[in-house]
Image (cartoon, rainbow, N blue to C red; front, side):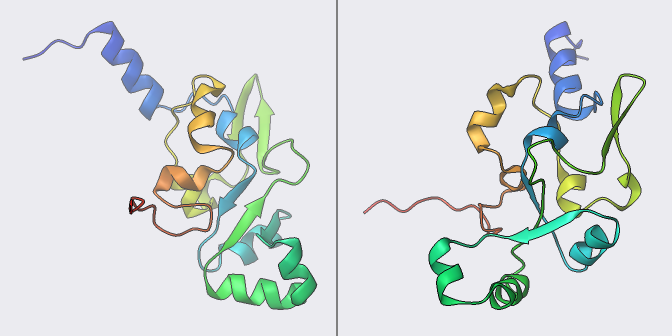
Length: 146
């Protein structure tokens, strides 16, 4: 039977156990929402948005863009002020989610591996990459070389 080395124990802790540091909720600016999660987030006082370019905003109304993105499951919980998720609270030096039992599926699927901010450079500021999705909420695929 193999004995767990201290390095393996640290790695297991880093990748599986939440340290309640709040890094995930403070650093990602948007989280992909599924189904009726957008309505729930709005009801609870969170911010919901879609990705839209200035060109798209010139060509279509905001309501059209919201409807189109909603039908494509490209709606996000956003953190517009740069302070992180509105549902993140600090108590006794630890961070916790105010809606933990009802948090979005993307948050449920998140596994902490950000002991420091170096990991963020791999994914930018978008947590959905950690679920195997690209910026638009589509499955990540290998780029075909021509």
